[in-house]
Structures are given as C-alpha cells and as structure tokens.
Length: 420
Ligand code: EPZ
Image 1 (tube, rainbow, N blue to C red):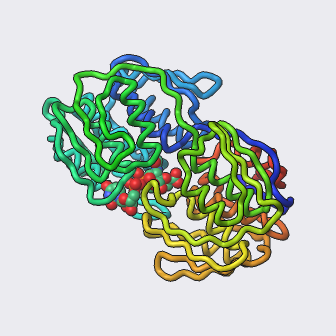
Image 2: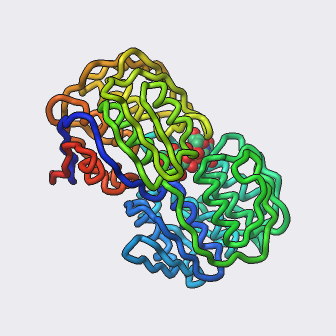
Image 3: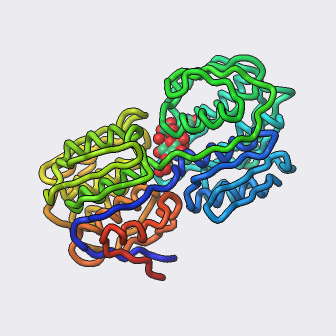
C-alpha cells in the first residue's frame, strides 16, 4: 500500500481548482436508476468512491459510458439485476443509495446491509422505516436488505427522528415516482441534498421546499434523462483553506462556491484569516500570522459540518491559544486525536469533545489514516511538522480527494506518494 511522505515546506501559496462534490455525485449517480432515458452527468470527481458506484451500476447491467473528462452517460433501462452485492457495498457504504431508486422504479431491491465504519455504527433504520411507510416490505436476510413493493410505492408523511443526509436522499428518490404526495419532515438541508433535488427536478420530478427541512414531493409516472453538472466539493474546498490557514499561507481556490460553506468561512475568519470571495472562487490570506484557536461544535447544515471537524482539529493543534471541538454527529469521529498527539499535539478527550492547547509546531512521525477526513487532518499536521511525516493507509484519502498530492504540490507543499 502506498504512503504519503510529507515534509514541512512553509506557507502554502498559489491557486488550485476544486473538483465536483463526491457527496453530491454519489446520490445523483444512484438517481440515474430512476430515468427511463439516458442521463448525462458532468463534473464528476475522479475518486475511488465514484469508480465504485459506477462499477455497482455496471454490475446491475446499467449502461455506463465514461468520457475522458469524467463525464458519464448512463442508460438505466439496461438494468437486469437488482442486487447491490456485498463485495462492492463493503467498500462503500453509500451503495445503500441505490435502494430507494431501485425500489421506486422496479419494485425490487436487494442491497447488502452496509456495516459500520471507523467513525461510527452508521445505522440505516430511518431509510428502511421510511420505505416501509411508503408501502415497501423489507426483510434483512443473510446480510442483505431485501425490499419489495407490490406496485408503485405510496406517498407518505414521514418524520425522520434524526437529520440524516443519506436517509433524506434515499426517501426523496423513492418518493419522486411514488403514487401521491410524500412529505419528509426534519429533512437534511446539506447542499448535496439540494443538488440531488435539483437534478431530480431536471429529470421531471415535482419537489417543493428544496433546501428546507420539509420536502414535499408529488410523485410522477416517469422521469426522463437530462444533462446535469455536479456542484463543487465544499469539503475539498474547506480542507485546502484550512491547510493554508494552518501553514500561515495565502491561496486562491477556483471552480468552487462561497455560498455552500459559510460556517467554515466564518470560523476561518475567527482564526484570523482574511477571506475574499467571488462567484466561483475563494481566497484566504493569513498575512503570515499563526492561526488563532477556534472552538466549534458539529451539527447538521447550515451549522458547522462534521466533515470539516478533523481538519480544524489539526489546525487548532498548532494555533495560538486553547479550543474545544465537539463532535455531535458520529460517535467515534475524534479518533485522529491519538495520531495527532503522537506528533506532539496537546489534545485531551472528554466524551465527544477534544480539548486542544495549541503548540508552536508538531514533530513528524509515521501515522495511520483511519477514515477519509482523519487522513486529511494528518496531511495538514504533516505540513506544519518538523521532520518527515509518513501517512499510511492512504486508500482512505483517495476515496475523497482527487490528486491531493498534485494539488498540494501546486501550492508549494513538499509531499509525495511513496510505495510501501
Ligand atoms: C453523509 O453520510 C456523508 N456521506 C458523510 O460524509 C457525512 O459525514 C454525513 O452525511 C453527515 O453530514 C455521503 O454523503 C456519501 P447521516 P450519511 O445519515 O448519510 C444517524 C465523508 O467524509 N442515522 O447524515 O451516512 C447516523 O448514525 C462522509 O465524505 C441514523 O441514526 O450520514 C449519524 O449519527 C463521512 N439512522 C447521523 O444520523 C439512519 O437511518 C447522520 O448520519 C441514518 C443515519
């Protein structure tokens, strides 16, 4: 397995472009199963998770044509197998997102039960209960979710007990072809949910309340193909901004949007960053200053995103002052703290809160990535550590960051991929 070797190289400076959003592309690729004519999706990020989702569609018989710019044309009419197999689902939990569309379009779906992962147990009870409320019969048998509906799903009034991005997406995709009206209460409002809803509307779906916590869907008989461009990745954007802040740098990020990560930008300004934004760009300048520590608490959008927590923990580890970082979404998403402490950070854990006292600099060390965003926090730590940092198990990072070492090299980082 490859590793990333990182040595301190001073403040990040320069300009990079952001890729399409992984967490928007995955549900939208699942949504192509709903269309009865070919659908064209562009601005897909070149990531392992996207490759896995395309492989999943292909293994179900769906026609997938990929061009050189990672745009795809998908013809779901060719589907001939309604099973999402264990071998693929175990590598990517988001495979569960094919459940709703397959059930809505074909009345049958067999999806391997997604297990937990390093950050938490990741249940799907809200997905399943919502589909049952829409008339599906669901059994879990030999590790598979076996869902059936006798005829079309029926619209229902559903209250989701917990704000769930995937649950909202699965039920939204089930509702668009259901008979009658579905109301999803306490729906997730993440920009990626909005992007999915906008794509479904482009396919002919009738959805009201997009971007709010109450989605009202009037089911239609059929959905057609369309051309859809995936939104920029707000977490990739935030990750590079935090890396620039931690290294006291000055960067400009293009092909992104400033209206989808306002909470992150406000926290960076609190840390002393000078931020400027335009329609499709964001610039950050630390004026050479050490970041100030910022406390935060993760919560559903528009609050501070859990997917940015690990990156800010790394920045706080070298910031001026003390801070607290509280993770409220996942039960085990502070695991990167242990590896950061091995690099000389001063972080203690109290339940779901990390108490951080910033140190001037960290010490390079061999460290191990445990999940996607924890990997990013270790890379950020390596950029501000004396000596060499070697990040192992970087297959995690390749799931969510396109060409991370090339993009960081363009910003002046001393980072390269080395074979084991
Ligand atoms: C999505 O995961 C993202 N993944 C995650 O990003 C992100 O961290 C998460 O939303 C929260 O924003 C994709 O979009 C592919 P949830 P998802 O359902 O949908 C509980 C990354 O790093 N819950 O919103 O799986 C659950 O336990 C990844 O890019 C239930 O209890 O997250 C958690 O506590 C990591 N029952 C909370 O809801 C359910 O049926 C939020 O989870 C479903 C969820």
